[in-house]
Image 1 (cartoon, rainbow, N blue to C red):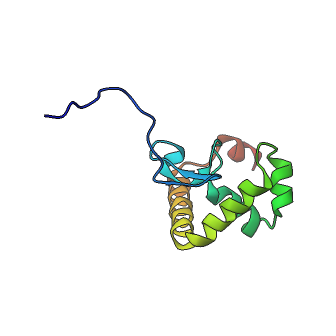
Image 2: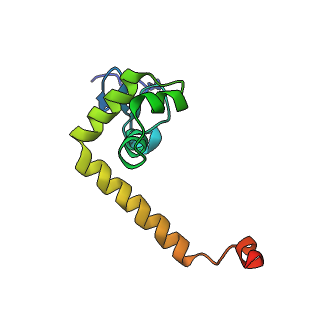
Length: 111
């Protein structure tokens, strides 16, 4: 009979490269820049939707390197369908919450 260890170990990433990691208990299990809480989807949105260049993203987030940003963009383009579906799902969830929420007291007072 084999002995099963009870020691706690850091979970192994399901997907890992030098710059990108996917770890079940970090960042909701979503792809993120290794060593950071910045998800690949954030970098993709800043680049594709806000039109920011990789240099601009690094300037706004000094902990990132150009290699991190390019790796995140490469991961995004390799997994675009999945990540875009995830972003749509989150946007729909947020819209549903907003529709169910009463108007802000501040907005009511201002109008």
